[in-house]
Amino acid sequence: MKSYTVHCGVFGAQFDFSAESIALAVSGLPNTSFRESILRYKRPRQRWMSLLSRQLLLQGLGEENRLVDQKTVWSLTETGRPYLNSFPDFNISHSDKIAVCAISNNQNRVGIDIQVERPIGEHQLKLVLTKAELAWVGDSQAKATYLWSRKEAVSKLLGLGMRINYRNLEALSNQVRLNGNTYFLKSLPIARGYQCTLAADTPFTISVNFYNWLTLNQLQKHSSSLIHSAN
Image 1 (cartoon, one colour):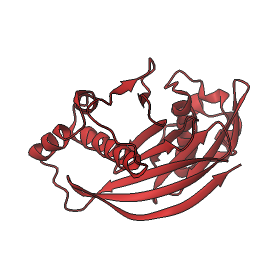
Image 2 (cartoon, one colour; image 1 turned 90 degrees about the vertical axis):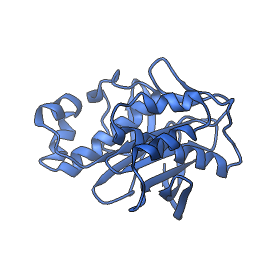
Image 3 (cartoon, helix red, strand yellow; image 1 turned 30 degrees about the vertical axis):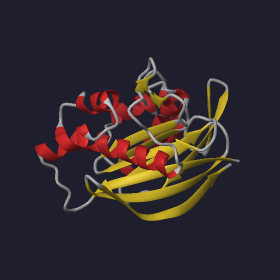
Image 4 (spheres, one colour; image 1 turned 120 degrees about the horizontal axis):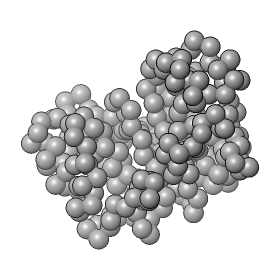
């Protein structure tokens, strides 16, 4: 069975979010391609969350003795999906205060999405949910966000962005069908008030590591080895 590792991170309570700190954090990235991937965001909060997701990626690759150096280029597919040549497939996501990074331990691709639970308008839900999904959701904000995350994870697995018709993807079970293909999903209990989903094209197991980014030089793991599976 294929396996994936998910690295989940939050900022420490005393983290320095000053302009000087973000400048130092960006300058500490491996090279210009990584720095430009952060600086394209205009808002400081977006930059910080993107920085956290990349720190999780670098940490995860480092734990597997796959070190990123100045020659490693942060690249994007035509549809905007990030990748690193000669490195395992990965996928990143962040919402509100939490960032996640999924790294493949095999040759298969991986998709991950995290969403903070939030109100989603009825009109918007009708654009993305099937009739069966709408009936299941009712007026539950948590259920709506749950399905949203599952559909996003499949889209990110495939690198389709918003080019997918979500109503063609019913995500009520852990095995879903889209365009004649089967995909496997697993919801991860990352934190209360969030919905997080990992998607792959084969059954898989997952290892989850949790980190606090305390200072620019200290990304501290505080728990790990939470194993989930999908069949």
